[in-house]
Image (cartoon, rainbow, N blue to C red):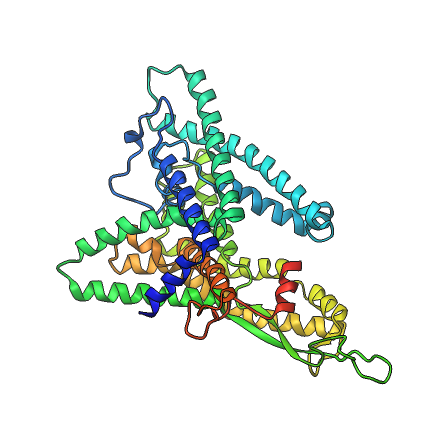
Length: 452
């Protein structure tokens, strides 16, 4: 009854209802585009009857919701935009110009970065589009009746248009819908692959009820562990000093003077980025051997092109742990926290301001990153572990890795926005205590996160 009451409250908020319907409509349009085939292509030549997803092309097809193997106009999906965003973000850590745009230019800087990201997306799409058309031709999917020049010209233009349109849909969802549009489009593609994989696993295990129950229990535990990593925080208590005005104390000038607050340091501040970087590197050995003219059936190519192999997962695990530390060091800046505390006339109890505070925050971050990186590494290799236990590969890939972390993160962020609408209208939140644990924080520290 509580669940249905919450749904009724959500539907009763006019603005929230319009935003949800708008989001669903645009996601439906995006899904429709994944079934529109490129001109001059026979998509049946790209089918993989065995459902193998333990290679690069299988993973790309997963994140595009099957559009890659459908040879659709949305075959590249939103991934070129994601790649461009990652490149711009990394440039913000190393190039002073991008650092200035990110932190000092305010709204004008963010608009400039958005324009640069869009332009870079187009450039990446042109390169990836040419590579995709080469793949189509190598698989014999190009119609023999189509002129090669026309095929390449129309194909690249169509693929670029599809990616730009997907990017536009994502931005419109973010502005007028609910949740992060780009992330939702990726999540929709992942869920589209999860549903048939789950149905197939249930049918395949219909005569092994106990095994199916164990699989579902394991999936639930892995999901809960992922939620814990995504939402887990370490609270560093703060004390906001009183502001003295003459002899009358703060005189009401600082409403929450003397109140306690905290800095929420995430257990996994790097999100899904370490897995993305590690996964990209894992395909380099096999790719290098292939381009160097080596044996395509060599041990290196076979092992590092199969996510279920032991060498792959050992290297993959340590890469995820290493990238977690590297990305956390780039994103969590103790000096910025220290500067913020100085401006807000706040301090950590028992810790001197300035350099000691910076060192203290850095130490805490390093300590909580270790267990966070190990758990993230285990989640990353969990699909291979469950696949080795007999779970179908198409379903095992959802037991962890990039797909599960993206789904959990996007769902939690979307639910947080819905909850904010409910709380503003004096309704109960989505959870019993009226606040999603780990997804919020105090007002002043939320502003600190917004400043970053």
